[in-house]
Amino acid sequence: MDDLYSQFPYDDAFRTMEGECDDILIDYVNFCHGTDYKTSDKVIRLRNEHYIESSDRTQKKRVSDAAFGIMKDGRMRKYHHECESGAYDSSVMLRMFEYDTQIALDNHKLNKNELIVEIPIACILFLRNEGDPPDEMYITIRTSGGEVSYPVRVIHMSDIDIDKIFAEKLYFLIPFYIFNMEKSFKLIENDEKKLEQFGDFYSKMFERLEVEVRAGRLSYYSKSIIIRAAHRVAYNLTKKNEIIQRKVGEIMGGEIIEMDVIKAHREGMVEGIEEGRAEGREEGRAEGREEGIRVFIEDKLEDAVSEDIILKKLEKNYGLTAEKAVEYIKKYSGVKTA
Image 1 (cartoon, rainbow, N blue to C red):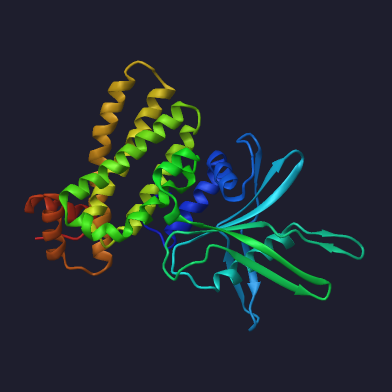
Image 2 (image 1 turned 90 degrees about the vertical axis):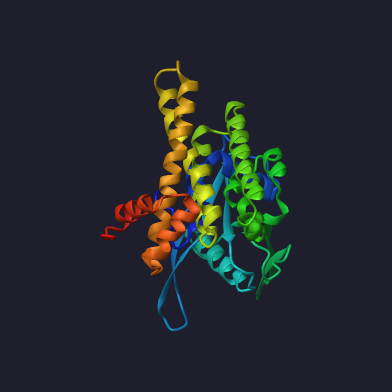
């Protein structure tokens, strides 16, 4: 998760947490499906890439967001989870079924006269309410042997507030919480007080995560993955909101650098940890600001925005002098600027 921008940032964040963090994945599964797995239960990752033949006989690659199994009491139950950021379209159920059947076929049992497949337990997380996504989804299969219908669990990010996240250990959803603020971005950008409140919200949320780590409810490693995922999601969601994006870089970029400094102290000497925190926080703010400026310049150049406009925006949004703005353009564009 080194590159802030990617073609599928929200899917990437979802897959990274699913693939790296057993503890927060299990807590999320328990919430979605009413199970009682313990973080000590074994998570087994299943194949999530498949090639599906179309009607014109061409093959299309399909990559599910999360396909995994959880082993409990000697039995593995299989799960398929998706994350949807676009407006709802009922064709999403077609994709769910495509993935479900491919996962089932990957883990089939074949006897002399019988093929046995197990459809995974399915769930979809809707990050937005556009298109009025349903509260319940079902897939029905009619066969000569009878009709079978199975549910697809639906989770709406808009139904999850920050207190619920911490009360029910839904740390998996923290990177996507910013979607609940999306409709307020214009207000936040045009109101300095609201911008500071936005920053304070994330600072306090990260402090609460540290409390969870110290209490043993969250691993330090998972905390670092959560914050990096939150950084990526927020940067991509605020592409058109430069002032908010700058704040995101200062806060979340700083948290990432600070974590690396504190980790070094934890692995080495214990003395001086508070000094390490202070140094990390200060260094983090500077690094986060620098990273925000870099991404801002590269993004604008990629969109063919003129250097004159970029310079003016750097001066306005980042409080830079004209000379410093020119210096940054030279540094990150490789172009000689007069």
